Image 1: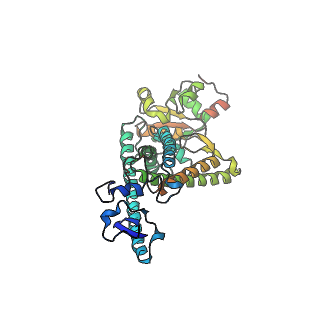
Image 2 (image 1 turned 180 degrees about the vertical axis):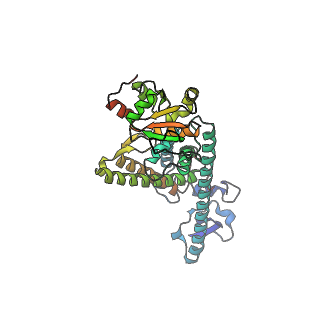
Image 3 (image 1 turned 120 degrees about the vertical axis):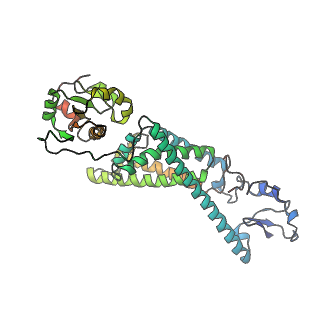
Length: 217
Length: 182
């Protein structure tokens, strides 16, 4: 048994009696690819180097493929995002939206967090109430007079809701419960769209119902 | 490095390097097994991708709950890109183009995900004083809420499958991989 090297990465086992230099005839008589244990000590050196180079080649190719895939994902992702109804701008998300802390301050532009009492007051005054939950929840029951604007499907609802809003009108937004921050996110979104007086009812629909307020279906 | 190119050993190249017999000669090189693994992973990842593709905000919201990334450009960029990454890798697995590269990407994704879920599980255990097997939440991958240990187990299996694919010496039933073209 002999080891025959045909190309840098092709090592084969050939029978002993195969004449050296008669590789052309080897085609029919080479038995199988060589493994490291077939090699004599000197051959092992070259065999190992070839193996390592081949593996590095494969590693390099794999890494290149992976990079191409990641780049493709970025390109396609951002392209789809710009045309998608629900697309977002990752760089202009949470704009520097001022949160007005002082409850007495009614002048500064920004978003405010209000409790149930203030909410009732505001609704009394004729604010527009926006429900930021999903359609099923809205149909199940919402604050009377509220308009649906599903935060996660904004693109589809904005067309209907925007016309009824005006820049200096009071807008009240609510969500499911205190732990849900969709109302705040929607408020920030509305602020960046140019509406200046937005109030977030932190307690949400949960608190509204628990306090026995009427609901609309 | 094309197969069957004109060398005196054209014939033996085909014989000597049949993936079926395998130069490593073990089950890792069985081309049918590899194909099945590829298809299984592809179906899973393509399905998961479709759940998330048009909805970056919802996905970003779910990722926020992990407490690792907060609102901001990195989170939103991930929400935009990751579903497409999954989709592309799924397509690559089925078609067989860029196969090894996509499997590498999937390995990385799985490792990151397993790490994130572990961190979140540990946080939840500490915060709510529940046992490991009680942790239940929506991981945001598109399959709904399940037990955390189930998620970890599933993704460890995926990781193992991906590693199996990575280690395979060659692939059959794959465009872009002919005998001896790597």
